[in-house]
Length: 499
Ligand code: ADP
Image (tube, rainbow, N blue to C red):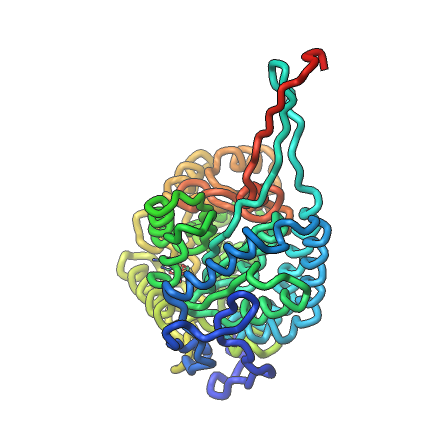
């Protein structure tokens, strides 16, 4: 790796943190308890700001506001076109405030500023525009039922949506969640992750400037077992959307079932295979496999974290993968040209280092990396393991860090079996120009997304979600709309059965 930055002197961000309270009913307010919690800069571990800490009482307040905005407010009743115009104006404001938003994102999360500003912010406004475009195109059907009945369906918003998001893509997850829910006419209480509360508060302020009525979107900062659990188990929340770990997904699903059986969509963990076939152009395969794993400091639910390489290209691949990891530029994420910043927090940092130790202890070969960088903040060397076997923890668990595990395979049937031998099923990468191989793998892999000769393509129109314990339901694209709609069947007798 190349350390392009002076770790000793972190760059001072160019924006101020203006919004730290809870956004309830269109106003920034303190928490009922008056409590706050610190959010940290992953470059140093220093406190950036203290934000209001929501607990059950605040969730009650936020849900009441959302309930009132849904039951009595203008949002579900305004024309779909007017709703779409609010979202389009919001997207324009997101574009206009890219610098402030991307700065907050990098500061709070540690991701490279260039990635936040040039890759993520455009995706964020794009998905809002995508769903803005859907708002006035959602409609029911006339159904050709047997018998003398006129049958229609009406698609109605489901009500108050509770949304819980993680810290790895704070603003992108915010946009994936609120875009479809708002387009369908719902109201929302969204809880950000405790590690990254800042950017969503800023964006929520912007959507009110764009004309969103108060109470339609409420944004709260707080912890999972308190604020998150209160939201998941709330009797007045009609739908829950969650992105996070599989372990927490099980908890919120149970809370939803035990309370009011609100439907739940879950976008959870993964251990996605990236399969390099024997015909691969090794240089390209190395680059793509590197990107698939190391993007966003390895903190992606769909990271290509099991790199399967055909034995005929294995040695060459490994040598080049190691060289590529050594070239990765790690440093202050505010610097231009930086590919990798710090991990999110000390907990994740320690966990990743534990996994690295376990890889070594279980007999995998540490090709490069394995240590922290510097003595403050949460930087970890880009790490590559070879000789990884399926029974090792590093091949089974989601590490969520910059640790690539390379496994050797002989033939396609074998790699299909090994790739599918996991309780996860989020995504897979396939690297081959052989059409039959690509088709065979695509059909056989039990995953929600197959990227062939590409990876992490997140267009707004492409559905995303998991098989098996990687989740339930889909986000993005047309499929996400149904998560936020009720279908009402309307049946009327026909006077003249012939018509
Ligand atoms: P991670 O381990 O990556 O932090 P989590 O699944 O714990 O992932 O966190 C994702 C989101 O779920 C965060 O907003 C977090 O606060 C929330 N969360 C964590 N625990 C719970 C819980 N018991 N109930 C509801 N939400 C929770």
